[in-house]
Length: 261
Length: 285
Image (cartoon, rainbow over all chains, first blue to last red; front, top):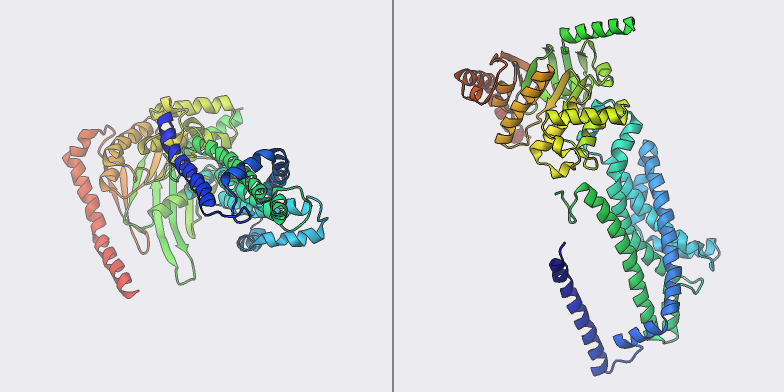
């Protein structure tokens, strides 16, 4: 991508964003909205600057929970997808359940985990993130391991490949893009889950907790400053996973938006 | 040492005797259900060493099934299939044949050279040896300059040539091809046919070639096997005999047209029935 195209694709959202913030600021002043209804962007920004170090540490706490859950969930999801691949019966028992569980709002489990484990510890929150990530990774990677092109399977059979060779030469490489797709979906979800898990009570260290406690004490601009911190953190997770996905796609000649070159 | 040389002599004689020997082979899919299909019934086929045999016929005539029986990708329900004097399964495990499909089926995460190396890698060849052989093969299909490219950087015709190089990498005496040029445009297709004859002529490779195209079958083959559907069976075997030196002029030769006509006549009889059958199936069902 050349500089001209970058500029062309970047200026419309920037102009829109700036205009939006300007209108927001103007509306609050003109209509005399009270801060508890909607604070001005400028006061959110100054609250952000004033609290930057505690926003940073809260982001590190929530982000840490999200990251631990993301890593553990990914490892477990990948491990399980290999087991399902290896044992057909297990796959037939678990796959429909996994798909079903993925469709229910599993976040409500936090309340249960809070009772099962020490509510003030990080365990319930990390466990929640792990669980959510686990299913996303499991479903995608299992699909990647199974959906090898029929021509590839026939070829490998014609070359007298052993099952372990089929796994190493075809199934695993085939599953790699599926893993990155799963990570791209799971990364923002991990962050969201980490925040939402904090709304169910527990330690007062994370972004989610800070947002609720500041709202409770009518420090709305500060609460919004923490919301801003949460946006930045979610974006960071998403960007890292998209960059990783971009690298693998480039190696395989996959153009973003589907298809091959 | 002497013993092993002796074995090889025996093997060579077997290879010289016959590449493929199909005897009274049949294949039924979905046996015993309402969807039972007699894909292949009572098929006999012998392919001699260095011989090029095409299988032609309408969809559902069992030509791909027959090729897959020879390749041991599926098992016959009845009859026997022998390749190079061994059972089809033994021949497959010994990598006695190479195979190419309509889709090039290249592994997109491997470079062109690494794709050609794959069968050798599976056989446990060391790295230097297999790289050397892959380069020889790419030389043969005139793609040596593209060894480090990725498959998606190549045109369809080039990808198919890589697939042929891969099929030939372990120097099999038999090549099994399932409509390998089916997805290519006419010009590329004719060029690829000439290349295939050159490559197989040089290595004296026997070929079983599945195709839909009458001119392709006539141009390439020593013999054309015409098959018919429901149930899949061989109806005609036509000797072509256009000689070993075939070029673009061959395609304009009266003898070429005579053979094309002969194959077309052989295909015609049941193709009309086949269409009528299909229409009846749609109307009735």
